[in-house]
Length: 104
Image 1 (cartoon, rainbow, N blue to C red):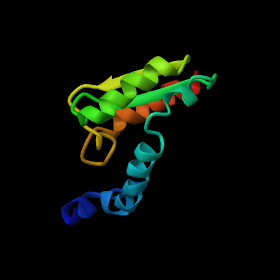
Image 2 (image 1 turned 180 degrees about the horizontal axis):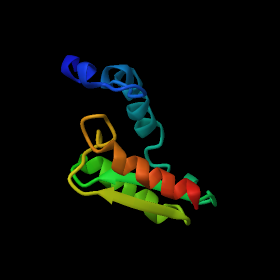
Image 3 (image 1 turned 60 degrees about the vertical axis):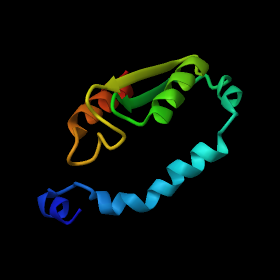
Image 4 (image 1 turned 30 degrees about the vertical axis):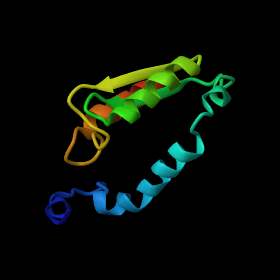
């Protein structure tokens, strides 16, 4: 992580700065277990992003959310994992999809 900090450019956020929020990911997984039906009434457009190398439980969750959410759009980034948006991954690919989604 220290070598990453040296490569950061203006506007970048280090992985070290983001790591304290990871426990929220885990907490959400725990809190939403067996509650897929609660998502079905959501009528908003939803963008689901994932990587082909993400852990299987994350891909499984996206599969199920894609089925449950009536207006879900799913994008899978080939060769990326759960950290695909960090500065050493492909943040430009994720940013491009976000711009596309929010411009629509």
